[in-house]
Length: 320
Image (tube, rainbow, N blue to C red; front, side, top):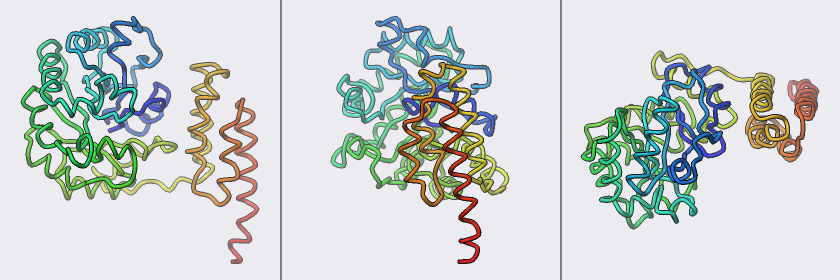
């Protein structure tokens, strides 16, 4: 599955992921229920979807049941999602400070009340994504997961870090197995699953029902589909050349320009370019340039220089 990532999993990126992953569940960026209902942001770009998005989970953040229910109903009416996912794991201060995201793990009874309220009012599966806990002294993921199940959640995803860890190293993969043993609903594993072998190891070792990939697909939108194929058939992932990567990057950039215009699309693409441009000698010298491009021509020119430089190095490396 594709994880929700702010500023990453927009409609353009999801379309690329979907090309290689026709059956996988993919997720929107986190959507503010308050923004939808109180600020009337019903037409916000973050809500956009295409038919190829399905199956898709729309992820909502909320702390008030009446706002959550209204937001979910709006999303269902306008976008027909496969599931509604509740964000109870975001570690960002502006989210937790609003008593949303991982802050709800500090009030598990209220979190369960939110789930029950939503399950009662909508006709879609309700899923929940959460972490190990607030910090290392309050890792309540087993109790929290059981409360989610009892409240009517159809599936849960565990990001195997605490809120205090943010995205630092140190995922507790064994927690996947503990949670799977404690629950009867599907459990999805998330956190530091970077390769197809990682995905296989997590599923076979801990018995989870699937994996969710987040930062592991930045600059590599094909990995969701490749991991899925590997798990189902044993077919190893493709070896992508630098030229292959740049071809997808240019397509990604062009779609963003078509979607948002060059003025907004190119700045949005800059971070993606730095992720696509990896795995070759001298990459650091180009990353700064790629984060300052202003046009498609700028991107093409830098990519051409990189490819030419790498081609020149081949004879030297062959001799070495």
